[in-house]
Image (cartoon, rainbow, N blue to C red; front, top):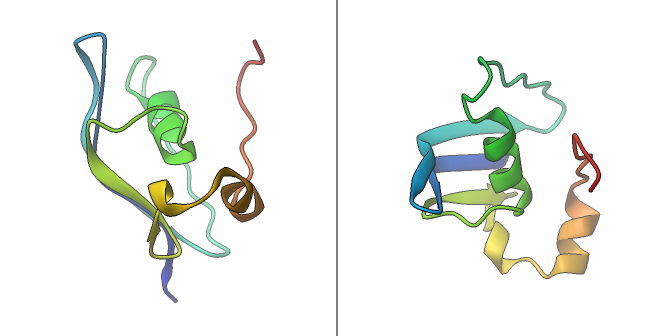
Length: 88
């Protein structure tokens, strides 16, 4: 089974603070994946980076072998769904 979603060596820096550093995860179609950790560990930041809501300082996120940046917004919306924790 090929990888449907991958985040490799993801680093997110906002306002000079390193929120994620060298985080990688892979998921295949049909797999259930849990992201666990204490408060402040970067779980929501990782999901935001995977969804394209947070710009990556380095690393890569791919869906079906294509970079997230290569998708048009409409095409990306057809490929994945995001349900935020909070609606602002």
